[in-house]
Image (cartoon, rainbow, N blue to C red; front, side, top):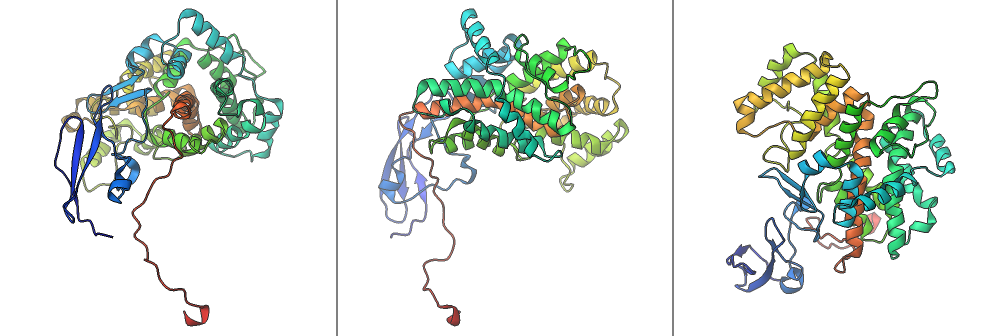
Length: 442
């Protein structure tokens, strides 16, 4: 096989790109695809058959793994669109189930469609009674995310009538069940971890209100839902509903490419989300605030954050994708202050510390010039802490919200005629073929 030194890009026409193999002088031309917006994409599907080579892209950060119509992100401009709608407009004007309908069906619902969708989801919120007993098999100190991985995957053992991915109606039923039951299962995971009785869902309440009641209500007294808290919870769900081809979404698509049932695919997404590099950022914010300890020490930690030789980093500031202000953070900034005011927690030491850190980051030239603005994780961590969620539940709430995005992406993949089972390639750097030696000769 010819040793290839490099491939050079020599043609930037709007419809093709030509690569030259410096070792052989051969030229290869590949089509350039244009989406409705965003960067152009080189179609390399025939690369191996034409050149005998693969691309090398650890983390797939420069590789388009699918053709999607669901979510678009322009990190440089701070734009996040769902089906063409700005996330700020959706969070300000819609409830979570409207956004769910949009992600699943491609358009915002009419009044009649919304009412029908809300009714359907509300009447799928209960879980099979034997699934309740499944929780008893976990240790009482089990992490809620460990429980969520288990019970979500176990749904396929309880709902056999919605696991045939070739049947559109079964796919739809599975989608509704997952969106409806995820808050119930998450609340049960919390209740189990604190030794309190499970609270059944209430069909008369809105999605976020119902979830808050299942988490915090107890049989001994009436539970009153603060409107500001319910609004903030709903916005958190909306803002985390989908975020393009991130690690957990790609995991769901990869698992689904093998034609695994939808419950197994979403369980795989939950497992991927559990990783601290993905779903644990808002938990890291609270841990950082706890480490700083008091407003008096903010200056010290700001100096440390600016020191390139100090490993300390301010968690919840800046974003891997957004090189400008995270558009979701703008929405939650307002909600965070509304929640603190409504709960009378402006004097909470940890939250006062967060507010001071926010003020400095928005005014300090170092952070402004580098666009290290507070991101969605900074504000969601503050809100969830104020509401009363333990940090072990933060990623669980992320999973509740992201379930609809995973489902929409999974559904899109199943219906894509170009879909194939995922099979990434590799750059092999291990030993070449070598002779086998019997044990006495080694």
